[in-house]
Image (cartoon, rainbow, N blue to C red; front, side):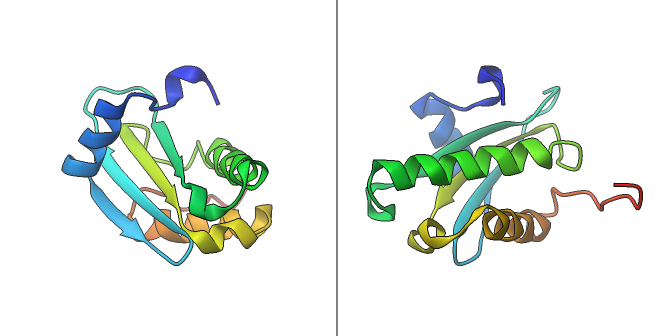
Length: 118
């Protein structure tokens, strides 16, 4: 995931929170904000201290980034996404994380259907 695909500034996070729509399941909350003319999606991650110690938080972030990397062909590109990890996310392995995020992104209707050849 390239640096330009990340949301870092607080103002950008706040804009997605205030203007975007949120979708959630037990493990994640995803905020989505359409951005016209944007060539590729951007993501911001929020993994709070309640999730666990630093090692656990970094692992959760790594899993989320990897899922978005794998799903980049199926995701809407003209969007900003902010993903907030909830406490149960700390206990997920990579495959469970991917399944959970796919579930939320399908609810948000930003995930295109997979083609049969993939």
